Length: 589
Image (cartoon, rainbow, N blue to C red):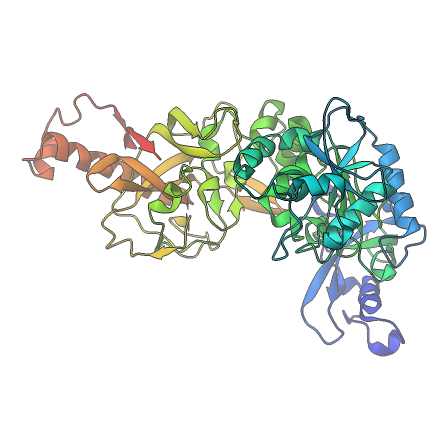
């Protein structure tokens, strides 16, 4: 049969999902033409929303010979607060048990039927504790204040707790834990001493989450009213096995939605919060309550109720670790970069290769007519060259990956970088300003910014502006844009992203704006740009050289015409130039 969608009469009484699964029987529905993608042992087929639909999702098919030992062959019940789910969580805990000896400043004591706030001192029994990651949302949970501090030490009334908090208490007790740490109940949130307490406690988040027994993540809940536990259709969780009788790997397969972990975990409400990112990474293990099932993350295993023994190798899921030789190496591998152990840490954090780390961009503000107000970064005193200065927008850091240990691709010199801390005792706390001093080429006039951010074929420059707050036309703006190239790839280079080969820009850099029209060496960052193709790179280099000529002529020989200045033998006297022009020392705030 050549039809890609089986007709209804072949599937009597089957639900839409089941009919879609039967598409695996028809060769026309395979997307990989019988070959494995990227060397992984899985295939892809189309999953139609309905029999009449032309649009389809993609399903990954994993051979049973690989996935059978990983999938859940036991009963899946209709509620995540079930004996079967708890047995599974207990099994995960048995495989990854590590008791720690440090306690936070305060914890919630669950040893009695009634929970209470416990201030830790030398007499406090050292017992394992859980932490909770949750979204406050529009529902403000019960908070610790100076007014209720004494009362909560006696009792935390259940009637005042959100469903998420009550579910978290249940989870901790079912895990056999006596303590739990929750931010709003363990850090003073209101009152004259709340700021100093928050500043102190927030600086200890590394210890709080690292020393925990596990982190409970209410991933699907937008606020505390939704809780951790959900009712679900067990059919959505049970492994979906299909028979494939066509192609190079016939036989039973297990079908999984494409971008499985991304959909089910990474894009959940909680994991869109920057604060929750550190909680998830620092905790030794995470029990994640999603919208359909429970997930598990630790430094060695990523699993869920469908695949309790671990995910098939074709499903990408970050193991919860900050170890460069694990995450850094894996990150370099999946985007097709060379195996270079000395770059693993830099691929994660860029603690030394600062130049590459300046190439972050915002995913969405691509209109060159959007110009940020200079006060945007001044309001919170965060340097504009840091992505932390953004008020909104998602940050993309793909180009910020270190490509070469010797920085052969970097064309700026980082001379100095400084961040002023509000409290020197808290190196990861709030900042009160900072600067970055570099030496590099500059271009300004004669450049065109392309608006088609995703159409890179033939594009000269693609700009990603940092703020959409205020409109201004770049041709009439009194403070013109300057372009600082940071990376130059002499030989065409590509990487793999989500299974697709993508070209790395020939030139990448940041867009600057002067802090004042009369000051030519002090700037704030307003965006990031890419230049593709050699001929466009040549145009950009010419623009840098032109800027050098115009600036030198203005400074040294302002009384001569450009032609007369060109004929002067000492026009570049005391200035080092190359085919890009001269490098200028500038400060970015």
